[in-house]
Image 1 (spheres, one colour):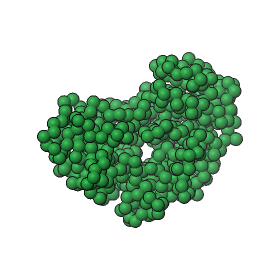
Image 2: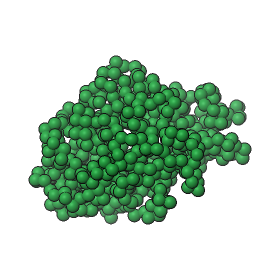
Image 3: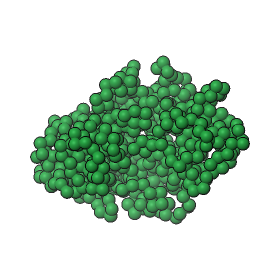
Image 4: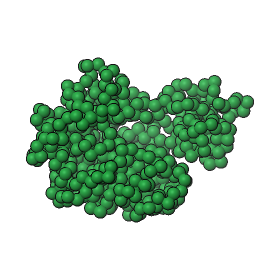
Length: 532
């Protein structure tokens, strides 16, 4: 089934904006000319104006040029959130140098792999992370390594460099996928993809010069780049940057920074919901919260408690916001809570079966996307033509995610295709079950996997990390049976000290599946078995 487009910014208008601006550098320069001394970046109690950030970024571009870097060369950034880190990216973008974003959690072979694969000419790394380089072979190191602030990249000439040769097709950055079942893939993203996503998001959320977007997610992730920083830049608003997410101080930071919007990922919404009620959580004007996922069971109450309109979406590093909830359709009606929205003017979206044929409304299949505008999807998986052939089939990008479309074109995310389970003929979403179990008292973390069964396709095993004393597995199963369908209730509960993860903190479910039912696993079909 194909979803109808929700009218707003048209495809033609979005394509014209992408073509007009052409590059991130040109966008920054135009906003600096228009907004001048107005605050662009807010960090640690200080404001950096549009003119100031443009000047620092221009200095970076000229310093890189003086070092011999040119269009298509690469600089790797392994740094925490800061205006200086942002200026390095924007400066490289002005010159046409590709920024390789390195997850600050990487070390050992994970770090070595990214550096070998991306082959940057320069690596800028925070001082506290630099010791991780000591175990790497010399052949894996970039030609130049700059540690901390002990470099002159921010001290080049502030005379603007020409950006006329840069366009939407010019490579801008490389972001690496998580690589849960194989080596990470480097997504080469063009300037056009960033511009399309930012203009589309800012238009949808009604951002303007009075908007302040709060961001506490790492800038090496696409969500922080597109839906916080660049969206604020497009709108001529303020980007309030924090070092990291903290549930205990989230709302005070919202108030302190004067935020009117924020975006979120993962379990942030649940962590905030589980905290005790505090007056500071409403010490702000009405907010727009953009991201995913929010459990359907708490969606409406979450919006009311925190005075926030929630807008979910579906997207990946590889594509530019193909699905979102329209701001003018929010708050989402109770019957549509949980939806990621409808396809946007930037992309076509379908849900297809294993043969690539569109499914009927309500039928689960793989989500596939196709751009409506050139240069709004990644250019390539760096050095991985095999992965490109696998991902782009029949003129569609296959996301590897399962979902369903309703008769009105609303998309509902179900699970990663490789993580989905079938039990008693029914599809079970590990994501939905993990969300439910994650709200059980005493559960700090969990992962749901399928264990092969001769009777029911998959038996469900949940691995649980406890927050303090071990939980009672039988009580957990009772909790699940009271809140979900019978075929979704786990059979096995395994208490573990920690979940296996990649260096980028993705859960390695294949390892849990391979370990299967261990001697310490509690089995609901064998009540005499004791848990931990």
